[in-house]
Length: 239
Ligand SMILES: C[S@@+](CC[C@H](N)C(=O)[O-])C[C@H]1O[C@@H](n2cnc3c(N)ncnc32)[C@H](O)[C@@H]1O
Image (cartoon, rainbow, N blue to C red; front, side, top):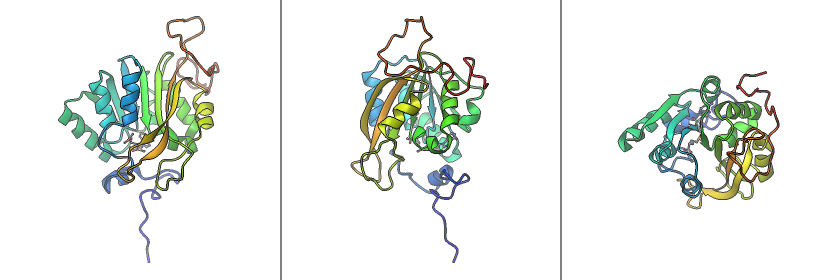
């Protein structure tokens, strides 16, 4: 008998799901249809500059639509055609102006950016397992000194079958601290249509350090970024 594989295992790369199949076959576990509550809290609590913003792995676009409504000049990228179709429809219905890009973020980042604010909900926590160095290179390329990066990532600390990949606080600090200064790291709960209480996560807001001597963005920090953290020079060219 031939077994039909789940999209979660039916991947083109063995370590990643077939994302488009997950969207085609119904509602993925992270899909709520509304902006993440934690994103809304961070944006309302912290004065982020209303400049250019990039959402990596935007899915069906609820967060991008929210950010556009808050005055960010939004670019939102996803590699799934089905997710982007739904995102475009959502943006049209809400009148949000968003530049949607159907592409692989690793390709996009070679020629695009930098952005003042970069956001992902549920991207860093899976990509780090196979491509941490490449993802740090992406983050380096799409940011500049003073840019903010917010990631919402699954957190260790609870048994949650079917939940997001879990990352410890130490891993978040160590991995992302190579590029950014920590602004805020706190627990929150991901909303999910599969589980009323949601899933435990880390909300991690970081900022790329200003060059030494530039006091315009002085901020309390816990990390100093190395001069050349991921083999990229200050112009974003690989060395
Ligand atoms: C866990 S989902 C999160 C979606 C959305 N942020 C949300 O919270 O609803 C991860 C998203 O990343 C997208 N993705 C995966 N690999 C990608 C890549 N290399 N480039 C761009 N998008 C990618 C998937 O298609 C999927 O929509």
